[in-house]
Amino acid sequence: MKKRKMLIAGLVMVAGLASAKDRPVKVYILSGQSNMVGMGDISGGAERWGKEFLDAEVSVYEGEYDPKAEYDKLTPIKTMKLESFGGVTPTPYPGGGTQVVRGQLQPQQTGVYQFHPGYDKSVYNIMEVNGVEVYRREVGQEPVWKPIKLTAGEKVPFKITYLTRDANGLGWWIKTDVPGTLHTLVKAEGRFPHLVDAAGNWKARDDVIYKGVISATGQGPLRVGVQQGGTIGPELGFGWVIGDFHEEPVLLIKASIGNRSLGWDILPPGSQRYTFEGKVYAGYKDPQPCWPLGSEPQPGNWYAGKQYDEYTQAVRDVLEKFDTLFPDFKGRGYEIAGFVWWQGHKDSGDPAHIANYEKNLAALIETWRKEFHAPKAPWVIATLGFGGDKKPDKFLRILEAQMAVADPKKHPEFAGNVATVDTRPFWREASVSPKSQDYHYNRNAETYYLVGEALGKSMVKLQGGL
Image (cartoon, rainbow, N blue to C red; front, side, top):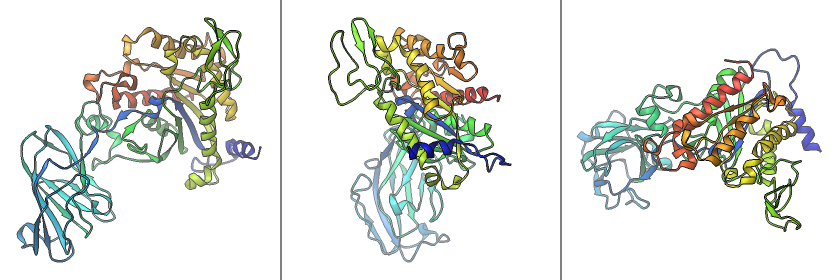
């Protein structure tokens, strides 16, 4: 009861506040299954470097690093060939002064590469490839990268100058021109330029804070990479739009995990048992998804709505610790400003769940509004969009149910406060994507960004914007 009172107190807007900097933080709750978690690849994947680096040797120069020194013209006090460079256990450097590594680099694939030399304290260095400075990180500064195009099989010289005594042969690189990755879209093709600063680094928004729970990880100002794991979800595009709309700060709480159905795992409280094709299907808290007519469900290690309960509790935990988790907003409170939903894949595998999807989604909207004391908070829904216009019938029926919930003729109770975004136009084929993985939209970052952007615009429209 005490926690519930605290939650309600946090939702109440403080009257008489004069400016946006004092008004409650706008909180949006994003949820669904794996595509809401986010599977849009930021890059082609980071790889430890190793066998591509040839003839590496380290030279040690007297004294601490001097930015005015021309080390290529100085005589080292020691030079040592590095039998192993990169990998997991590179040959240790001798130390004893400023260390500079030189050698040859021979990539196996033609492409554009971003280099990440060093690990832990050894990241403070300057790296050059073929005479071009591709990386620089000075002590106390953020790294600056310059991607470079390399040709498969062609040897080019490289040099790494370490700025501190901490130095080793560890490092990795990212291929940044893989089709459909965010690196390629933004840094090679010039798409979504607002995501990067003048130096080409990912830009952060201090006015939009992200917090992931369950399988959606990470916390901090909204930027590419705030969610751990090298992927983006719709929160990026959504947050950028919604942050521009509100004068107040925005908090995005994303509670999501993969392979969950609305008809079983996320079934909302109050859902009743029903029969379908000779079977009884679970109501909330039942321990089996379905069982034969005339029998009772058998005990199990899961129950209908367990994921609903876990999502709800995870969001409550964040809200109850609001002042502690977000000290910059301490004392100003928050209000639930809206909900975002992207799910449906797992339900498409069960005819009963397909038949009841519209009913279950409508119940979820009503139930979560009650749970979080936000009876009029707008909802936006992203449809199941696998395959674009060529989607199978089972996917199409889920999409139709998702569209129906926002139809004021079918659901007048949601008129003007629920909207659905058709994601089919954002489908991208595997040939222009990082991977052939249709159930994750081929991991195409453009798809995930555009879905989020469309959800944001839909949410703004429900609130009288645009």
